[in-house]
Length: 625
Ligand SMILES: Nc1ncnc2c1ncn2[C@@H]1O[C@H](COP(=O)(O)OS(=O)(=O)O)[C@@H](OP(=O)(O)O)[C@H]1O
Ligand SMILES: Nc1ncnc2c1ncn2[C@@H]1O[C@H](COP(=O)(O)OP(=O)(O)O)[C@@H](O)[C@H]1O
Image (cartoon, rainbow, N blue to C red; front, side, top):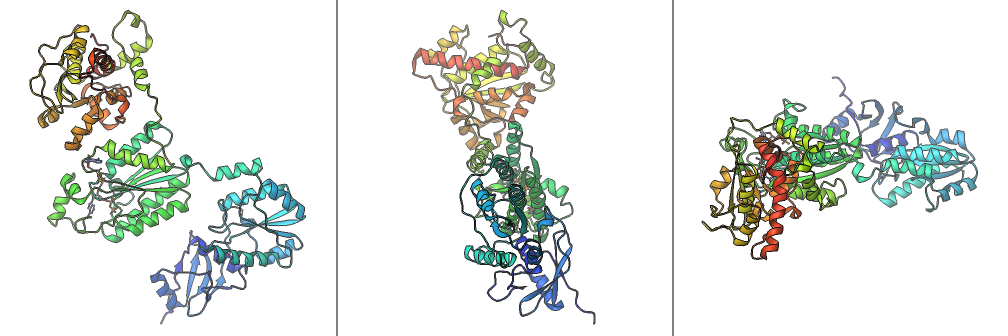
């Protein structure tokens, strides 16, 4: 009968570090894995353990598959037979065995080092005379990355009579255990020579400080993986896309999208929705995302990722690569996802046509380690996105919130937009340029007129003023039609007298106007709804969340149109896709009952905003109001 095959296994980094020290005798008197009461353990996955127990051994390989050692697997300690020494890795020539160190450096003072040396510590080492700096670079031990610790220690050694030796002493997760093991390992290298513990004091010399700074990127420069998890239809892709738009608009980082559906058409083509294939799918996404984060990049992932253990594995992969992992649980309940049923999949799953459908016939394990949890039910995308942006900003990773924006932005915007015709405009090259761009992309003639609905509370002050001014400003162009309504509007009331006077001062009349309440039909008919305040916008979106792409505050829309040189329907679609945030500073407040001055101020604010919005909608070069 052929002897059972010895399985191969790539251990964790901590186990690899232990293996290296075991192989060179640096952990003596510990000589094997899994000695009684020893922290130096090796754990094998069940299927490998079973095979190794049958074969009596396991072959440990490095992450690239190079066999490093054969480990005897039996009832007693697991003894190690080294096969090859690790040959690659930065500063490899500094990894020496205790025997080599004793042969080369006997008689020096031995100094364990776990952090970059300060000016005080440099003087301390200099006073020792000839020294060996033992850089303890095993997993979890140094304060810096292993490479940075070695670079910093070598830089320090340039100024001293010191040699540097790299010792992969890993942390075993318990301070006392780590200390005892460290003392033992250092003693094995020092032999009969003196060991000196450094005091914790001083400042980093500039040259060393630069190495440390490069090793610890500021949070905004660190690689970041934003991982959206949630049921199908919960809003993962929508929120991820909106977030990526914000990142690109801000322009400080590039971003890679790893959307569930898109990955399944490419990287994971051919995988099914079995538990095992889903795990493979998520680990592939995690692997790519971790690599992106390793280089300081930003990856946005949006698969369902229903299993907690797989998500944890992705988190570990990213952190291992030096990136930060930020988990967003899009916690929209099943009932809402099923009600949306955007792709008709829930209906099919209920009918038994799709097996193993998440939430119906396959489990979704809710995360309890999410950095933020967002239920999108009844909310606009902007509102839901704000929760994610706030959480990201408070975690210090990415500040995409508009909080520190300049409150005078709208005034500046208005000032830079094409203005009402005045003789001063003639010959102004900026104005001519803007006009030329807009005029070159008129709305398609065959399209129905763009229906614009202005909304305020009672439909007697602000929204009628907007309607009448905009209609006049557009010179009744057939391509755009303006109407208005009130969230709490009465039917058939005339315009408020004080506001009508403000209109009159501009040569406009309100005689033919009568008020009306907002209705579902009006909302549906409108291509664009512009509200006076954020509260009106929320009022509409509470009942009609699906209309978020066409409902804006007037100020929000005025700010957004500056970014596009489109007009009419195209402009509305583009702004709907990449809108800015509705913010209180853009609100047009209610002048009702506050006298002529308040009415005049309100009218002027609306005039300024419409000077931006109306020419953009009509594609005309100027307004004539
Ligand atoms: N059985 C079953 N269960 C769940 N989802 C299914 C299934 N079959 C097809 N789909 C469609 O595939 C999308 C989910 O793929 P993911 O790669 O994100 O899933 S997973 O993370 O591997 O579980 C998911 O897309 P989203 O709606 O974007 O989440 C579905 O459209
Ligand atoms: N606040 C909201 N956030 C995200 N999506 C929302 C919101 N309100 C309604 N939706 C709608 O829910 C659906 C979510 O679909 P999608 O983003 O593809 O989900 P998933 O990627 O999780 O399957 C879209 O049709 C989207 O317009």
